Length: 466
Ligand code: AMP
Ligand code: MG
Image (cartoon, rainbow, N blue to C red; front, side, top):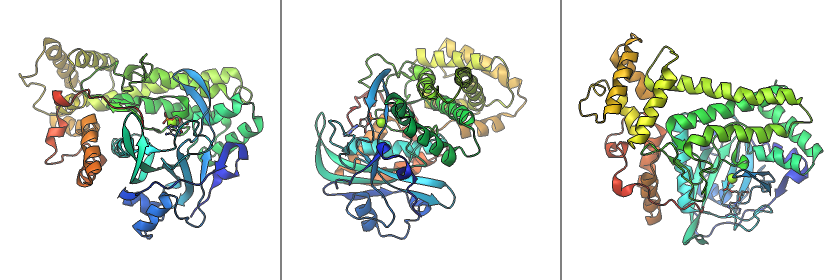
């Protein structure tokens, strides 16, 4: 059932726009669970493809792009908007509530500025896989319905080919939608958007409670990213969801060799969005967002909501550290122990995911092949801490495996899949969807991808154009 509620908001916030079909469109993959969920399980693949590609309508669907604004790299960027994404409708689903399907790469919109409205296959495969990987890691994210590849050439640094990602979320509303109304002095639109957001996504909440909850979710998301070593790369306020899920995958990357100051976006020359800065950027973005509510909420209250971020982030980080290190009880020294470890992993450039997965093993702590005095000394402290737990080692190991993934989306893995899909082979994509959906499980035949990235495949340039 479709209910296109965003369209009921004032006209200035959205525009009707027909997708521009990509030439030579081919349905590369459909997430069948999501397809069932939104009730499109029965329609043939060809019709699903035609709908996603803007060649056919489904009764009750829509075609809209929304207007938003935002701060990009710390600077007010003015009006932006869905420049290449078109929403095809909001489905009311039996178990997951409202799910909006939005096609990225669908062609120009009134908000495209100088862009061509397209997305390339390379970045689309990366977004598709990473959405699945984040969900597998239990981290809030936009989800995906389908991946479509076209033959149409798209000019970037080189000539690439066009693709579509059909992504799915309860709502597309970003911090930037509120900033837009505030900065362009549109109080009527601002109030309507606030009311809409509260009623649909934070029912029972006052405005203050809603802002408090958005703060909590943002803090928890930042803690989750740090836990798994995820670097977003473009943490502009227009890329921040008001529901606190990961949104707009561009030049993202997971830590491979641990580098706490890792910058995954080559256009980010100042390292504003470096890995270790992400939690501070989260609060900076929230400050921009909360400031929009100055006329509705007393400033002291906004300040205390913003302050709560630090409390939420710390509590969630401590909870995650305990799970990551296999502690059932909390000790004051745990955060220090963890931070000391991060410093060692950073100094020795040890593979982040590989290390924690090995730390989960029962035979590894006492493994004499573990090199480096600092690491040996740390492992001794860790063992002393484990003694205070009184939990047997097999139980610790089992618990840690559930909280330390074996597989993450390494850049070279994404690259292998992109090359395979470009050659017309879909097997690699299917394999990696299966692995990344369950990243904590064993996947026979894939073990070599769980180890540190081979030197020859490290740090190859990820083009940021998408
Ligand atoms: P992003 O960095 O992908 O989050 O994009 C920032 C803004 O630029 C958003 O408003 C996008 O819709 C827009 N944009 C990015 N790439 C394109 C493109 N190829 N065509 C039109 N708009 C784009
Ligand atoms: Mg964006």
